[in-house]
Structures are given as C-alpha cells and as structure tokens.
Picture 1 (tube, rainbow, N blue to C red):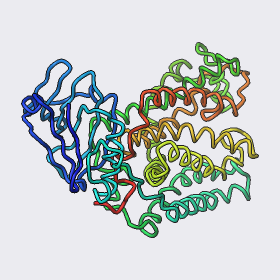
Picture 2: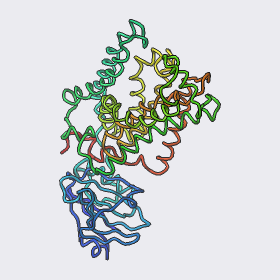
Picture 3: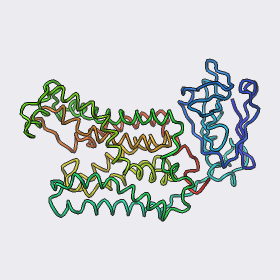
Picture 4: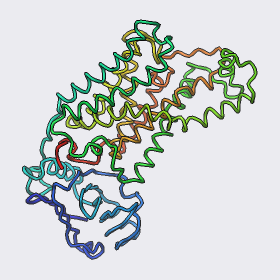
Length: 441
C-alpha cells in the first residue's frame, strides 16, 4: 500500500510499513510539472514487469524498480488491490504503479493537480479540494480544423459532382487524395491557429515517442486483426440474420464477379484465390495505412485530444460524428450504401461514430495514433470480405450489410460495451494528464 500526497507543487509517494523495505524506497518526490497524468488501471497488475533492478517479486506482490523495454517503472502493488498508474516525464521512472485506497478520487486529484501544475491544488491528494476543471476546448482551433478539412473534402470531390459521380474514372484517384484533407487541416490549425501551440507537436498528435513500446506495438497488431474481425463478424451476423446467403465452399459469388470481369476460368482453384485474398488483408492494412494516416492524424491524432476537455465519452462521440459528416461529399453520391440522401449520411455518421470510438480507444489506451492508423487501414482492406464469400444471386442490402452498415453496428456496439464494462475508457488520451494544456512543458 502507498500514501500519495501533493504539496508545494510536488507529488509524494510513500510506501507504507514493510513495503519500504521490500521496495528499498522511503519516499519518491516528483515535481507536478513532470507528472503527465494518472489512470485507474484494472489490468496493470497483469502486465509483464520486466527485470528486477532491484525489486521484490512474489505471488501477488511486486515492490521496487523493474526495467522493461529499456524503461524503469516503480512498482509497489499487492493483489487483490486497486492499482493506479502515474505517468512521468524527465524522471528516473517512466511510471509509478501503485496500490492505493480510493483510486478514482486519487486519479482525479493527480490529474487536476498536474493540469494546474499545483497552483490551485496543494494539499492531501485524497481530499475533495484536489478536484479542478481543466482548460476548455479551443473552439477557434476546432472550428478552423473542421472548416479546412470539410472545405478541402468538398473541393477534391467537386469534379465528381459535375461529371459522372463515382463512375467518373478519376474517382479512384480523388478518393485517396481526399483522405489527406485532415492532415492538411491539422498542420494548418496547429501552426496557424492553436494557441498556445503544443510544446511537443509529435507527442500531442501521438506520433512520437512510442511509450511503452511493447504496448503500442501489440495494440497496433490488435487493432489490425480486431478491425478485420469486426468486418468478418458483421458479415457472419448478416448471414445469421438471413440478410445474405454465404457460399463458403464454391465461393460462387466471387466466381461470378470474376466472370463479369472476363475471367471465365481462373488459373488456380477459386478456393485458393479466396485464400490468397484473405491472407493479403493484413498486408493490405499496412499499405492502406498510408492513406489512413492522412485521416487519422486529424481525427484521432489532433481532434480527439483537442476535444478531451469535454470528457472522454463526449470527445469520442463528437469526433466520431464530425468524422462521419466529413464523408458527405462522397456518401451523397452513393458511396458505401448506394443512398444519395440524408439516410446514407446518417448511416455513415452512425458507423463512423461507433468505429471511431474503437479507434479512439486505442489512442486513449496507448497515447499513440499508430494503432488507429493501421486499424483504419485494416478495416478498409477487409471491406471486400463479403464479396469473397457471398453466394451468387444473394441479396446484399448495403445499408444493412456493408462494413459500416447497421449489422456491423451491432458487433461494434458489443465490443464497446465490453470495453466500457472493464473500465477501459477511463484512461486519459496520450497518457498525458496535461494534454488539455498544449502549451505545458
């Protein structure tokens, strides 16, 4: 157990009783300017600890300094127990992982104190006086970002509106180009409007540093295969609901598509072709990640943390709605759902909000934008899965069975409920309690 207090602009951690001996630590003092933020992490106790340097490691007890992936973490936890994680900068420890009493109140107190650098929050971290309201959303910057990203999207898509719509041959070029509009909007907003400008722009946007490295890498891998799985489960659920018929043996629908393209007799068995297509999806996630980066650097990289003063859920939902509306230049041409009215746009907003929550969760959990980039790329790469397994002649109502259609909403909603039930959305974005104050150093 640990006693955590905040006094005179510093955070103090004092192991209790015999834990001073086990951890070889009497007290840790950290200036609030070096506290990035704190989270109540239900799963922290199950993380790999690394090498003891020095530390006690026994069943249900970890106490002392551990080194993993080149980073030092101070652990003083017992199971069962409520564990918080305090992220630090420019200190000998990257993190402090501690068992404490009243973890939720303590996390709020630490984040409030860090957000104010201790100016308004001196006292006992367990007390209610520690709560404070972070600075609000920089609405001028948000409006500028939205205006530029939307304006560029409409400008890029305009040739399709005046000549042929999505059937225009240049659609295949303009749609990927449109995905970089949020990147341009982000650069313009950060350098021309946002004030104060982030002390570290790469860190604010989740580009760098990748800390902890292992978690970021594994979350990226999880985002890739998780996004693919969402699309696959959506197709299977659509079949279970009787909305489509699948052919998982002869792949007659895919064979019919090849015939339409003039391939009467494939050079290899159709089953092998389908297998190769499926194997290529994760590889396609990496390739599609290039274009997805153009979007994600804006939506999850800049907009999500910039809306964070509204709260985690509000930031996730608002950024998702804006993301969906941003697609209106092509959705209103029939993209994705074959609908050219407000109903198609409503479907896109709903799908983007739900998928945006999942991508946003990876941003919240790691502080990095890269899992969202490659998760988005994987989702796009897997979008054609249903066309591989659908039976020839089967109906396929796009508003219901497309990757962002209503059936896949059910899959994504269930995942979100599971994440929320396990407390995953309590983590702060960027692992930085002061990300709400971009000028802080």
